Length: 396
Image 1: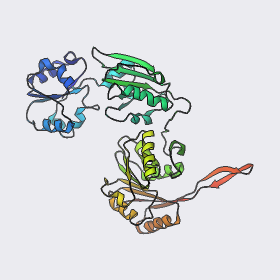
Image 2: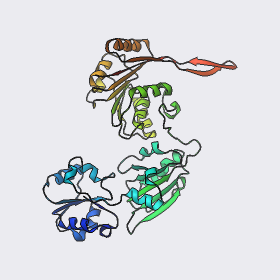
Image 3: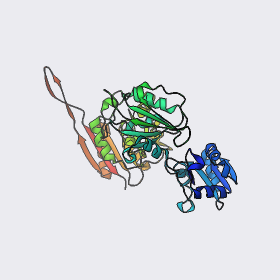
Image 4: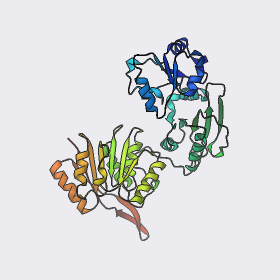
C-alpha cells in the first residue's frame, strides 16, 4: 500500500517505485494511476462504486503481488483503514506519504497535536459544530470545491463569522494554492476539488458554543416543553455512564436531548431516538443537525412495537411512555449483558412501575428535587419543579 502526494513520482522513494513497477495488479483512483502511469507494467484497476466491490477484488487476489495506491497516509481517514478490516497487518506492507493534515499544518506552522482534525469528505459539514470552541484550531478535510463555501456559511450563521478560514488546495503539487479570508467575507471562486480547510475559531456575541460539560442549557434545544431538563439530564447521563462506541436507545425521546448529549461524548457513540409524535421526530432531527450529530437515528413509532429490528443497545433510557404495557420488559430483554437501563418518572403511574422493578431486580432508586428562584409578588422565592424518580439498573 503506497501513499502518494500531488507531486506524484517525484515524491516517491526508490522502494515505492520498485513496488509499483513490480506489481502484477494495481488499484487506485484514476488520479493516482495517472500520477504513476510511467511505472505501471501490470494491470491497473480504478476503484469501483460502491467501494466494497473493489475490496472484494483486492481480497480475491490474495497471493499475488498487488499494489494499492492511496492519498497521503493510507491510515489517516484513508483506504488503509477499510482494507485493514479484512487484511491482517502481517499481510500488508505500507509506505505512507505525508497526510494532507500534516502538509496543511506545515504550511500554517500549526502544532498538529494541538489541532482538531476532522474529515468532512462525503460527510455532513455539520459534524464540525461540536468543535467550534473559541480559540481552537481545526483542520477539516473536504469533499469538493463546494465544501469551503458551505463551511463559511455554517460558521457565519452560527455566530463564528469572524473566524479565519484558510483554504489549502492541491497541497504538494504544481497547483498548490493557499488562501486566507474571514468566513463571513467568503468570496473565493475556482477552488480545486482537492482541498483542506483550516479554521481559527473566533466566537462572536451570541455564537452557538456547545459547552463541554454534560447537562447543556435547555435553551440550546428546540423543544415544546417535552425535554429532560438540564439538571436531571446531567444526572441521567451520569447514570447511563457512556463508554466509547456504545449504542443507546432513547425511548420516548421528546426533543432528543439525551441521545444528542450521549453522541456528543465521543464521535464513536451511536444512539437511536424512538419517538411516537411525527412533529417531535422532525424536531429531533433538526436538533441533531444543530448539535453536529446528524448520525442520530430517529425511529418514528411507539414502543414496544417500534423497538423491533433495532441494533441491541448497550444502554437504554426511558423518559416517556415507560408505563405502557410491555415497554420496560422489551427494553430489558433487548439490553446487552452488562448494559445500563435508566428510567425517569414524573407521574405516579410510572413511579409505580419503577418501584416494582426496583423491588424485583434491585438497582439504584433516587428522587431528584429541583427548585428555582422565581418572582413572588415584588420579591423572590423558591418554586419547586415536579420531582423525578430515577431507577438505574445494570443487566447481569
